[in-house]
Length: 241
Image 1 (cartoon, one colour):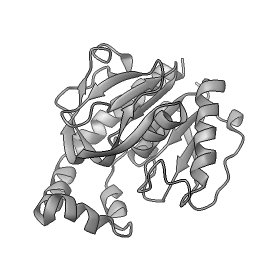
Image 2 (cartoon, rainbow, N blue to C red):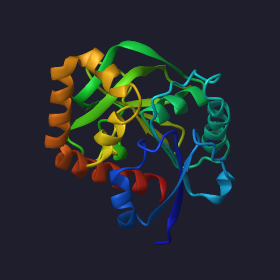
Image 3 (cartoon, rainbow, N blue to C red):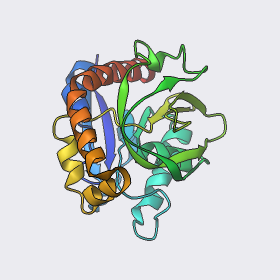
Image 4 (cartoon, one colour):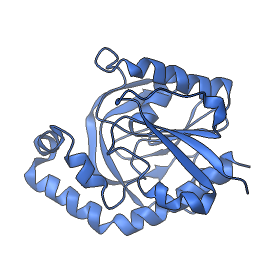
């Protein structure tokens, strides 16, 4: 199989493809990462076989503070609507996909910080993206915002007790998830080096809660990474037929 070149929109260095970098060769994927917040420009999308949009501590509506969000949303819309491009959005990327395609993301009181079980919906139960994933799998979450309105004709494939939309399909080849399947050994350290993030998380879950989060993330990392490889293979099999 020929290599597939995937363009990756990053919004900060610590929000990157993570463990998927380790899996890339197994699926003949090459990641081409650019950091929009650092001022890197969006190249011609048609030169790539897919687009991934990662997480970040900014919000989808903060266009005055982060003006590159405007062009990013336009690029996502172009990729999904006009080019029918294979797409994966993670956390902020999930919310940006919704907003770019006519949906809506808002702050929620039902925030998720920690590891949570994600269950398939009726439409997701036999969906090939979720093939061989177990309902007992716990996924890492750090989000205070959720997609409250999905784009027209979108499908919600998985949910949690606190968040209705955890995995979404838009069109034929665009998928996104609210949780973080990319976590690897250095992910948490990177997140906690983001200014004000440790204090913000501690305010929400308490010092003991933050320590429990760190411990559970470490303890569950091997299981998370195994499930992420399954998810990655499923995504590649779906979009690169």
